[in-house]
Length: 411
Image 1 (cartoon, rainbow, N blue to C red):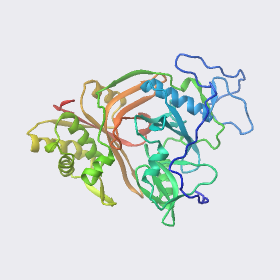
Image 2 (cartoon, rainbow, N blue to C red):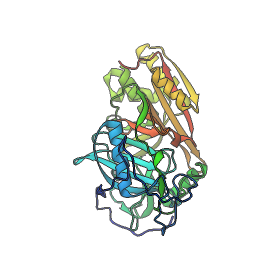
Image 3 (cartoon, rainbow, N blue to C red):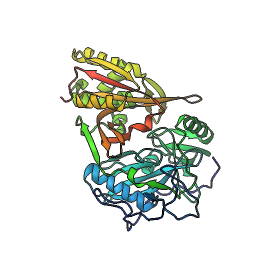
Image 4 (cartoon, rainbow, N blue to C red):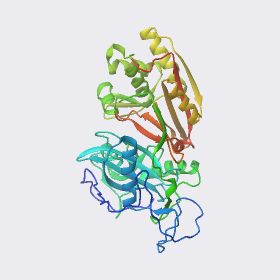
């Protein structure tokens, strides 16, 4: 990655508002008019030369207006809300290849979620979350950025991908060019470059194939509606900020178990702190690092289920059984939701020179779009509202489904 000029991080938010005058993306049930010019098209998401303005038949050109229309339509079909769409920011991989865009939702002045589009996925939606006070991806990163940091980009603000649900901006932190992620991790630029290159190497070969912004997407692949959906009904979960404030600790798997305990009525002494500490110990979670007095840790996937068993038996004389299914299919997860049964979806990857990176989320439901997009509806442990993640996005990672039997869905 090339060195870039420094610009003081004096903004608390980039508000790249877009006026929506185009009707290039039709609402559900409407038809879209596309030019009659017909040129050969080899694959969806085709890139053409910067000089060409021809639009392949059945395709639409990626513009800010298109991103706004797609984002607005998603909010309507998902939540029935007509939200403002702002902060249209391009997303790149470590090779500086464009992979998609992120956009932030607002209801008036209130942050109301985000969506990330990825051109290499079947239906272009990588993940999204809609709910009051959920910040956009850029704001998430700024909230985790050290106070002494300055951004390092030239004429275009860029967000760089890492793992699924991990996004970075390039900053100068304490005199060192670094990548700051929405997860709070800060890596010096050489470490981040090595880390991101290893991840790119194991992704499908189609990822990050665009070298310009002159990209056409196949209209039929843009989702218009959800054709299948179900959910257990989790309304909210404990946010990372709440957990850190009350416990001084954070580990994804422990937070996932905490949310299940809260939903099923098995909070120890009705205390977040007592429950979290007991779950941390029973799952044998370990501390990876300490920042600002907060212990950040991880948990072996194979110990999540047994740890929950031990916690419930020790503190409530409650007997449950658990299973761990490696590499679960989407249909397997659907059957768990339809049962209904509490479960945790775990995914991760061993980055050879950088250790293990993983995440665990409570599965609350699923959604399927008309063009085959498959989404998990999850409580991701970072904020108190649900997130929808594209199941195909984790295809290159190892994964597991932890199911809990004889445990109620609700208290």
